[in-house]
Image (cartoon, rainbow, N blue to C red; front, side, top):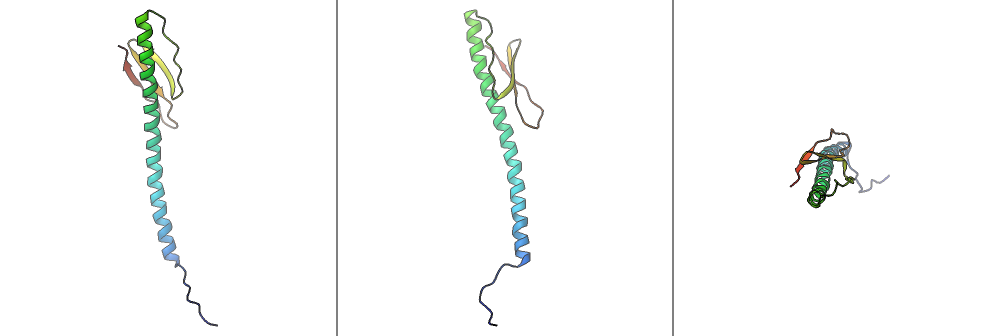
Length: 102
C-alpha cells in the first residue's frame, strides 16, 4: 500500500493546544466574574443616585419620602442623611453604597 501525503497532529501537539486553551479560559472566567461584580455595583450606585435626587426634591417640596424602586439593588434605604444601596451581587456579600442627600 502506498502512503498518502496527509499527516495529522501528534498527541503532544494536541495536548499542548488543550493546555493553552485551558489556561486562557480560566483567565477569561476570572475576568468575567470581576466584570459582573463591578457592573452590579455600578448599576446599584446609579439607582441610589437617582433615588437620592428624587428624595432631595421630595424633601424640598415638603412631601413624604418616596418609595424606592430597586431592580439592580437588593435594597435601597434612607439612614439619616444618607441613601444606602445594597447591590445584588451573586455569590458575594453585599456592600453598602452611601450617598449623602443634599
